[in-house]
Amino acid sequence: MPDRLSALDASFLSQEDATTPRHVGGVAVFERAGRFDYEQLLCLIGQRLGYLPRYRQRVLAVPGHLARPVWVDDVDFDLTYHVRRSALPSPGSDEQLFDLVARLMARPMDHDRPLWEAYFVEGLAGNRVALITKTHQAVVDGSGTVELGQLILDTEPQLCEPYEDIWTPRRLPSATQLVLDALGETTQRPAELVENARAALGDVVAAADRLTGSVGGVASKVRSLLRPTPAGPLNAPLSGGRVFAVVRSELDDFRRIRAVHGGTVNDIVLAAVTGALREWLVSRGVAVTGASTVRAMVPMAVLEPGTARFSTAGLVNNEIEAHVVDLPVGEPNPVLRLQHLSHAMRAHTDPGRSVAARAMLKVGGFAPATMHSLAVRAAGTDPGRLVNLVITNSPGPQEWLYAGQARMTEMYPVLPLARNQALAIGVTSYHGNVYFGLNGDRKAVWDVGNLATMVEDSLEELKGAHR
Image (tube, rainbow, N blue to C red; front, side):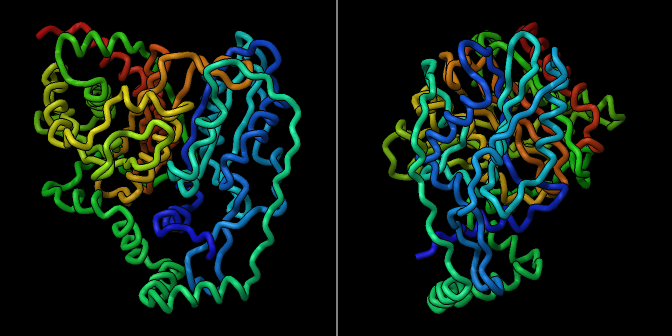
């Protein structure tokens, strides 16, 4: 049987265009120690690709769009095409690095090759290097395929020794075989033939049906919202450019705020973002009243019904559910904002299915890289009209991790922008710190650096607030 793309994955590909590339990214900063260079990175990734067959496969369309595309081995696979070398003018600053991140994330990937890229960036001040990764939403499913960043990071320094690559690609199926397979499947599901033809002609309804059918729970929750999505500068047509900014904060600050005001670390993350969005809207001249809100989609990890516990060997038997939360940007009091959000998040939490952060930390490697990818998949049902932005938060390990012999010191998620959504925020905790990655459209959210500063100010406001 052909390895056919799921309806959701096919939708991610069909919806993609020059202004809305659908890949999830990450930027990790490392202290270079010992022998760690581009050749070592090639060795490390190449040695472990056997665990990720999808990373050596590409998408192949079926003639006449009789069925969804299939995954096939890339017979011309070239590791050096996917793992690339880059450099900043030495001594490179963090601002130059994040500008490079924005430019790389704005570029769609070649659909005729495996849908991932990694960039080894040299020249950072302080004898540091960076790794920028891009993985298409269609690739990572959390069970058979995890994000590349989860696979190459270890708890101890490693020196990659020369290895023999014994991978042999399978022969490409012929056009005749693709058609016969498609016809065989459609005789069992004739409605799918009509759906595929409509999608090939750009039928928006067909694409929407695919999405809602794939993640029906999210779609039904979105439809249940009675109030219209708040208008504002976050929903705008996208340009082809991106801007990227970061926030570095200490996990202990979140714990102190929690000890005084209650809530969870995730609630405090949302409260910090809410306070920043309030100030940002005011700086844009938007009228903010006591009733003003910004609607966010907040994906959260849950257990599948009947599953006893969160899988620690991988992410199998676990789900990400996307919840819609109205951020109270009209509330001037930071403590009340936090209380409103804690109450709203509790309303979305099923005690029997929620996943505690400490359970997620037992997943091998750097699981947040995969969790952010899965979160974006769960949020992929929104066409950019039902919410204002997506915010994901995934806790990471509190021990040092290494790529080869280089210790990772920082990690920032980079979420893709959906059509008409000009901002997406990913948050990850790692080794005592909390890292925010703010990805924005270059025209609509050109001042994303100001917004990042406002997140820092909002956290300081919560730290200094009294009951």
